[in-house]
Amino acid sequence: MFIHFLLAMLPIIWLIIALSGLKMAGHVACPIALIITVIEALFLWKQKIIDVLTGGLEGFAMAIWPICLVIVAAVFTYNLVVHTKNMELIKKMLTSVSRDKRVLVLIIAWGFGGFMEGMAGFGTAVAIPAGILCGLGFEPIFAATVCLVANTTPVAFGSIGIPTVTAANVTGFSPHMTASYVVLQLAIMVILVPFLTVFITGKHEGAKGIGDYKEILFITLMSGLSFLVPQYLTAKFVGAELPAVIGSVCSMAVTIILAKVMLKGKASKFDVEIEDNDDTTMTVKDAFVAWSPFILVLLFLLLTSTLVPAIHDPLSAIKSNVPIYSGEGASPYTFTWVSTPGVLILIAAFIGGLIQGCPVGEIFVVLGKTVIQMFKTIITIMAVLATAKIMGYSGMTQSIADFIVRVTGSFYPLVAPLIGSIGTFVTGSSTSSSVLFSKLQASTGAELNINQIWLVAANTVGSTAGKIISPQSIAVATAATATVGKESEILTKVIKYFVLFVIIYGLVCYFGVKLI
Image (cartoon, rainbow, N blue to C red; front, side, top):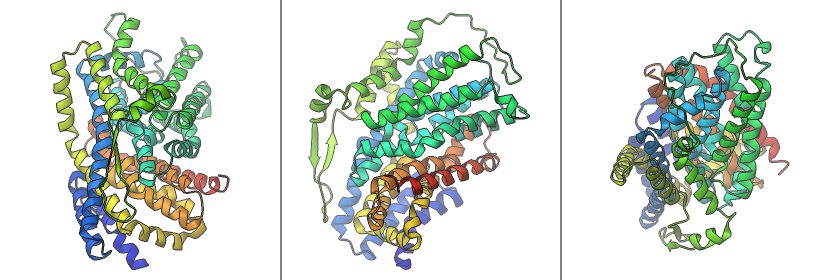
């Protein structure tokens, strides 16, 4: 069993060595992992060559539609807003609420970062807020650190929920139930992360004790609660696509209102000096135009969700069932052509771009540049999904699960989130972690006779912790803050938060599974 475990782990071990040790790019390392998996499936697990090929092909299909489609569409939406210069208006709105650095971090790193993660993911939630903070005069290493810590719990529902949706698709479980369990396991950290960001900011700015935080504690608590409650309700009644988006919008609104009311006119040693030479008054129309692509995305996804069956049901019926995998237990792969987030986001982005006055030709140019920008990411995701499919169909994933169950036994839920975090650390993507390990979590749950969906959710939850120390995330942070070459310094600052996350997630998973 141990030898089977080591052999089955080879593709994962390779990814750890290649990405963290050899500093190899994901679009190079992941195809090599796929090749290793194909060789092992053929010659060690004795799978038929046609089954290996069709299993990998099914992974490619899932990668392209809907996962890569969503990623390209979400990043395209952001790129379009930058292209039309409306991102500058959004920045102005975000920084006009308060001069208190702690409030700005809550709004920009936690709230707006959560919104960008929910919309686009893939580094935008670190790069954009960190860039804004640096523009406001925050110290670059600090900006990178606080944004990495803030960009954790929203990751489970990043890129319109793709990590959680993928986990549900890979295992065949209900996306609604999976999403609900994810939020339940995240709950403690959703409340705690705003406090972490505020305390990191205070410590950096010379706070001496708890007294320096007393005027901000209630705002911080409500910033977390106003994220958590809408997030859970959205996950339970709408689905896995919008929890981070709606939670972050509510959190920003509550934080802004409370800051306006409770800190109005109050100066503190945490205030930042903001130079604003633009005296132009921003109208409601200007604000709507600036946010229009994001507003339309939210509107379209809500209208086509199960909350509106009159629209959802006929659109969901426009689909094709295509047989791809040829092996035992095969079922047709379903392509949903219209009622899929990627298509809806693209439509919203085009309409939003037109509202912002962008010519159609320029919109297509931005789309083309986005596809080129995301090309390496697409290769990485295709290779990872194909690897995961072949590992699952050949029995390699089951071999890993069998060994882990034998070693950890009834204590396995304690390490379930850690496994998810390893997936994100290696690949830089919560989605890839879902693909790599969700089936393993489900298989382990079946072996232990405990709630499988709870363990699958724990994998996605754990993957949010891995995002803090992922080399790719840190690379994004250093690029956004012009601190390239100081990756080890940032890693030293954030690794203690990773340990805290993994411990809390493990305890929640272990004790929570006894109550489910």
